[in-house]
View 1 (cartoon, helix red, strand yellow):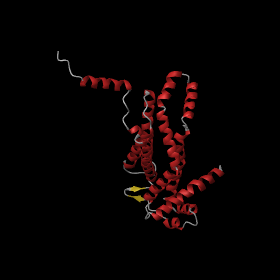
View 2: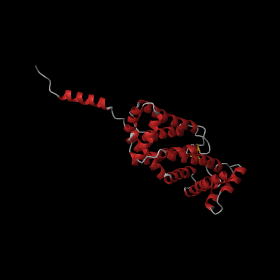
View 3: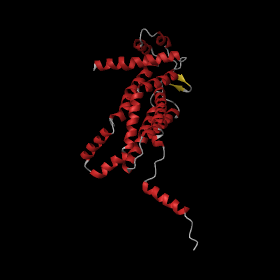
View 4: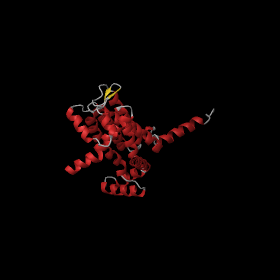
Length: 267
């Protein structure tokens, strides 16, 4: 346990804290801008994993009709469906972990950033002492930055947003990002599950924003916006596009247009 704690502090917490204070000194003592820059840096570091996730999601959407055929063919034989699904994934070079790994990796970053914000903005004597011990001795800019200015517009980044602005932005940006990456499914059950997931996580994070430091909420919003931009250049608008009409419905519409275009019999 002690080894895990040392690894947590030395591999994640201290580098993130010192990097944040370095950005703070370089960005005119703006803690908000330093969080924004840290978010972009984290996104760039995890970009290869993000691209892998998006490509895996896109590939799954391509084979969606084949997955539906497997469900119809094998009915309630879950074991057979699972075996055939994994075979299909292997044929198309899809890794199921590729869809969830970037999200899993970001959880420690969120937890670490939460601790960093609390540590950096703790202005009590004990807090300042702990902060000075966590800084690298050779990084003079970080030592000179203490104490930090937590103010950004109306926000105190160490405290929750007193208005609903950040919670709404957090929920809305997360909804757009999830909607963009969720493939359109013709299966009603799968579509219902997708809709539930698209609303559950944005609402949950928006609710958490009311009680978490606004600096962490700012990280979420910027991270979501950067993610939306990355996803657009890799997969386009994705699930944000209207779902195509079913084949039967398209056939009926085409027949209707054809009949409308024919001249009427004047007899």
